[in-house]
Length: 67
Image (cartoon, rainbow, N blue to C red; front, side, top):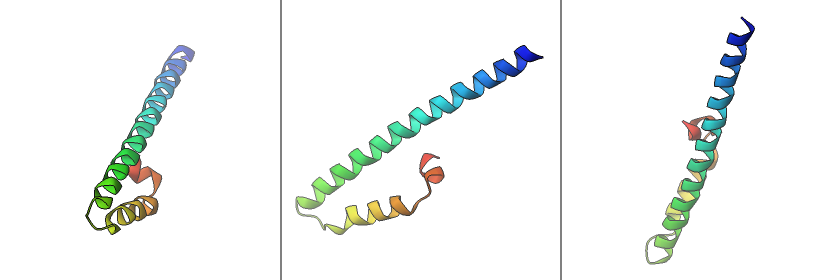
């Protein structure tokens, strides 16, 4: 019984670690996309798009951003 508990705990720990890494990768991707969008807007488009994207991201709970 104890082995089963430790195997389950180990599996859960690995899953949480893997998901945490994915969240960090997605956050880095969002930052990159926002930067690219900001570069586009400074090259002639309206400057309100990055502000709107950033505002909507900051209003979104972390759980929804990760999903």
